[in-house]
Image 1 (cartoon, each protein chain N blue to C red):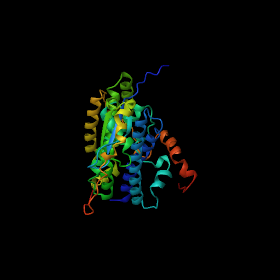
Image 2: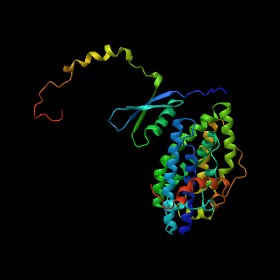
Image 3: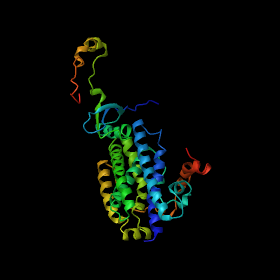
Image 4: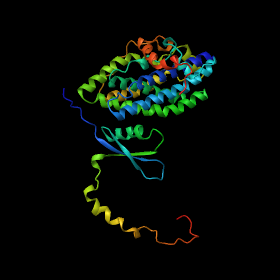
Length: 97
Length: 251
């Protein structure tokens, strides 16, 4: 017997935990379309009141950086610590920085 | 307003949730996709939670010292008051989804009306549960459309399920003395009004699903007076074995 069952496409799920915060990637799931993906995301990833908003995107639509180009893309920044704003004396009477 | 009618009415609501919730839980680990497995288990848990609240209220009106657990686990089939549609075996996925859809469409209307009940505790439970029921209906309704308007195979299975389950829908709108007493006391809504709202929802979804609504004819009856099918006894044997074998067990 041949198995001609087609896999549902994969979707990436992003959940916003509170208003004012950004949507955060929480995982992926299979669904036939976007509507179903958003609803299943509610069941799979929001069972414990994790969110107030859900985004889903087809995994195939995500363009990712090439891991083989890691050295040219990211390595040069490792040695540029001066790009962090940590070389300043903060006046003691400045609050909330 | 005698408490016995109030007890009886709450028992019907609670038992339907409990029995259908258990039936759905039988899918856990067996649903066609992992995501759907979790979705069905969530619906099962929602229904069990509703049963817990409704049976606790029922026990209060009964006033014999029983609690929700005693009602759920220490009664036999003849004492259950659930709708017969809730105890129907799961069958295939189309059958489970169709049973759920017909039930969800009823529950949404029922809870929507009960949220304005003169019984404030019941109104509170219904106001909370209606949000769950609306999501259940969206879930099952979309599946009915997907299956009905899907492949020839899914269409024929959905139509079979609808034809088999249709005679069980009449019970949702039965009006006996218990219902009449609660309607008069403005505790429960008039079943005829529920039926017309339910019919609109069902007609819309079935049309979109390209499924043929069965002709209205003879309807099953008996659940509300404790005359159940053999299927309920088998289900209760599984559901109740632990608390009956180990009375008072905690974990």
